[in-house]
Image (cartoon, rainbow, N blue to C red; front, side):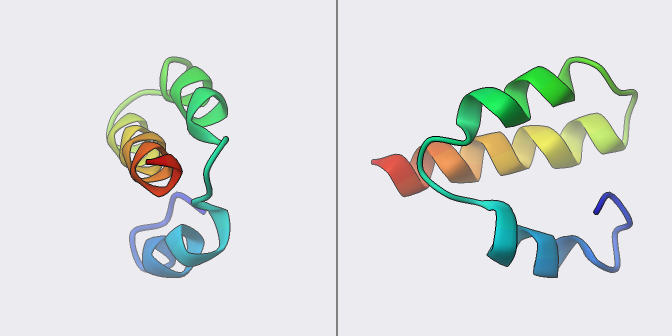
Length: 50
């Protein structure tokens, strides 16, 4: 999921309202660049919830 080439597909499958907390948690556990990708999933999930 953290491979940059598969990230667009992952966004389509994994971004949903209610997932923000999980993505923020995982973003805090991994180093860059995975951290940034997971933080983006958190932000996109927050937008989906709005």
